[in-house]
Picture 1 (spheres, one colour):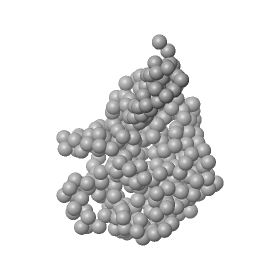
Picture 2 (cartoon, rainbow, N blue to C red):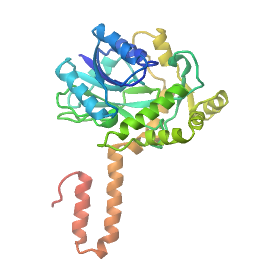
Picture 3 (cartoon, rainbow, N blue to C red):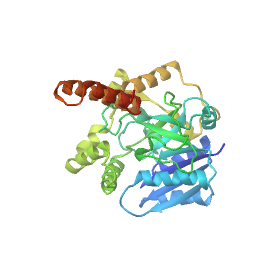
Picture 4 (cartoon, rainbow, N blue to C red):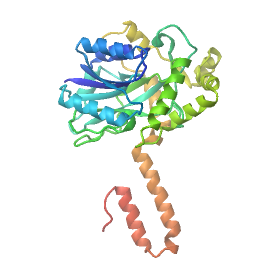
Length: 345
């Protein structure tokens, strides 16, 4: 089995080298990377891996951030040019951590009829600025936020079987294509996510992300990026202070369960852990299940569709007595929408 990771990076020199190092050690065989206008040393890090024969580098010079187009191109190249059996579409601040076993073990276990599996974001909180590498200082994991305007919102990311005509929607949350059937109820990966790592990085990231998304006229600016950029335009200091976890807040968060200490990535990048993953404890399993039930399912496509159908049925019931369309026809239409098929007997 050959696993290829796609990667988009812009000014991620503080994390991208460790991100690639981690995944190559975890079982990724090759990386296809797009560098978008980096000026901080990210390009040089990617070129070092390219010289080693571990990475194919694509550079993008325009300001517009057309993520879906770029990741789709990379995922197709992984299938057609770089011999992938499986593709993981990742951002530079994400670390795919198998819940049990190693990366290849997880992918080998996927039944043949399924072509897409998902990992769940596990968010790591911003801490006071430090001169240490990010993985030494950012050890506080926080529960996800159900509010889509938060950078810590609940979300999934997708890995998929290689396919030459795959389409990757914005955000890498899915993979669409022939025979790419989603295995819905299994989250074998935790995607350790470090979206904010310092005050300078926070401000640079969300300002650039807002500008890049705004120039992609095919989609609206994601809500969390719009919210962060809006705050940064009025009061950058307040935005940073709202998210940084000082020691007093850490103690309170550990007490009420909002926060947890998680040293897994630090230990792995230090070389402390090697070989097979240790199995998560029952407490870990319960905490992850609570996150899925408490926030993630509200963003699931099937859940959202069911809610919209129920809303449609309520509206139809309200207008049945005031419309020329027979009530039976309206109910038939609602049933057709619910089952995703055509209206009929």
